Length: 313
Image 1 (cartoon, helix red, strand yellow):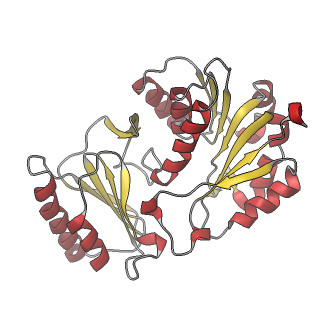
Image 2 (spheres, helix red, strand yellow; image 1 turned 180 degrees about the horizontal axis):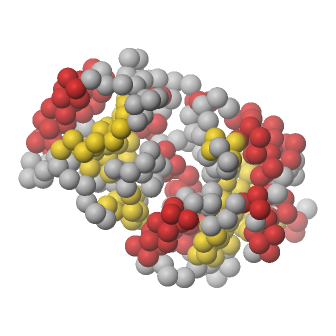
């Protein structure tokens, strides 16, 4: 736990939502169970193993001491979440959580919910993916009717940044109506009342509607690695990838994401070669520095693929 305590004792005051300590990456031996995130103005400490009250008290005291140094005029707000098997628990340990709770990343606002569920409304490890989308869309002329398909859209963060960068239309698809409702709020938070559509459908049963809305200049695939009844990467990812050629516009791009420690980059590359060999790998995006992993293949994998440009073929 010393590495976590040292990080707390020396951390600056962040302004955006971000991860501060990533024990799961294996860079701090003995601290693999811990993660510390900041969703301003609330700290979220997560443990993937059971924790006793004395340990929590020690960490709470460390947070309080550092908070008194970096934000002496503000109350300390922190939440503890235990995600150990059989010990799921979320507790407000000090202070309060705003309602609604809105955080920022690169100037964009997002609604989050740190006291409810394991996912808080914004995946912090996908920050570089959102930055890539912003830069990629912005690189196209604003007069071009750039169209984006956001599959497994969750709370639609990719959609918001795409619209901010100049996309003309974004189609968001996700089975979870509640997540899409938050996504709609995220659009309104950032001043968008038009330009995005929201389909609360099973993607595998909605291909007709999705296809009719295309072709798309950018497709984002960010599915769960394992969600019973919805998506299992080992079984379902190939079914997604084989659809890309018919959905992508010439010279269109796909952002292909996978967050499964047991599946490596080769899993995606092999399936892509089998299902959509005409798409070319452009790059693997880096993860945020805070998510550094001693074994990078266990970490989030975000690959950029490109469809052929028929005009130059």
